[in-house]
Image 1 (cartoon, rainbow, N blue to C red):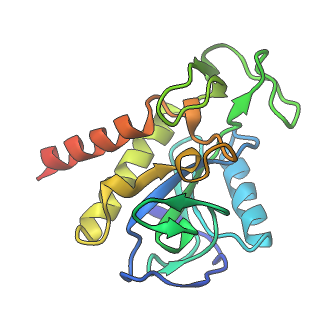
Image 2 (cartoon, rainbow, N blue to C red; image 1 turned 45 degrees about the horizontal axis):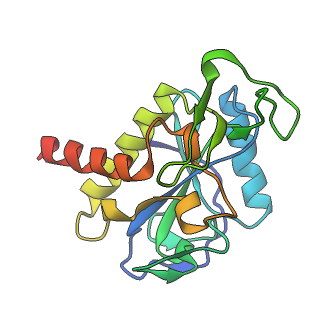
Amino acid sequence: LAQRLDPMKTAGAYRKGYPEGLIVHFTAGHCDTEKDMISSMNWGKSQGLNFMGIGPTGRVYQASPLDRWGSHAGTSSWPTLGSSVSRYLVGVEIACAGKVDASGKSWFGKTYGGDRLRSVPARANQQAGTYVKYTTEQEEALIALCLWLKSNNPQAFDFDLVLGHDEVSPGRKNDPGGSLSMTMPEFRALLKQRWVQMS
């Protein structure tokens, strides 16, 4: 499923020997080519972070084994997990500029427009504003990755723990926000529906 890259730093073994869920991120960086995703992963490695990646064409990147966790969510918490959710949930960074200003300008100065943008009201996890969209290929790859992770260890991986960074770090983070075409509760419901259809 994934293209292997040089290993990123890990901090320990998952308590169940496998991720219990997943955190959806965006890179908040350049996102036009697969090289942009690889650059984000190389930057993460230099910072001592650990995450999987999805490039603009839907290519999935993996840089560490799935029995070991590493930092990706920072200060975070979830009711059933407590704090520091990186210890339990694998991070997936999706190459995407993320939230932009009303004119489509990103924090790093590039302006996006047209059908690359989506404006959303405040709803569920989504903070109101304008976002660069995940590509269709990225969304399909994210769904496939979640289903694949579940199929490998259905006892450990829980769709209810597929969360947005904005859900575990509210007010501090805004990803995936409106970059994803649905709210995170809707995304979890879709995963459960697809899983039933596969069974």
